[in-house]
Image 1 (tube, helix red, strand yellow):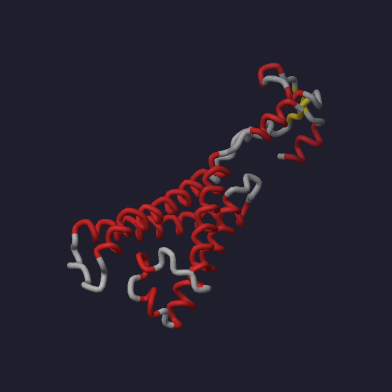
Image 2 (cartoon, rainbow, N blue to C red; image 1 turned 120 degrees about the vertical axis):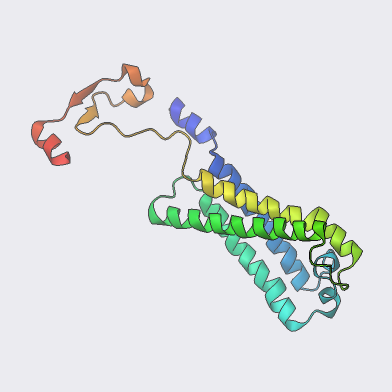
Length: 199
């Protein structure tokens, strides 16, 4: 019982980073939905002239669409935070987590480098305020999300408290043996017919 309570109290790195990624994606989804229904706080420093013009394609794809994708990302992060996820679903979630993390990092770091080096000879439609907020807020925000998804995917394969299964052909002689140190456990061989069947 004590061991079980300790395992419940321990939080694996995948659970921690998965929750952080889930909160990141949910917050970004909420912000886009707020903009989609007419909110404008922070939109001008993110979208520039599109914030005032609000063309239909921008509202549908750039606000509602991105918000929906963020919700899907939150669901993915929630799956990565589940330590009991196994098999193909776990493998698929892990690869998707790597993909999302990579895209967010490329977006955040790439735009940051382009703005800092002025490689693109900035478009005159991009204001100085929009450039400053992109450097100070939006790019670090994307980098944070990329790190959270990447670390959640990386740590999802190493749950805390996992122990290797007993050797083939042996079983614990005492039902309470798992609660004692490994060096004090006693095991008895299985009957020949059962051991042969397990091989």
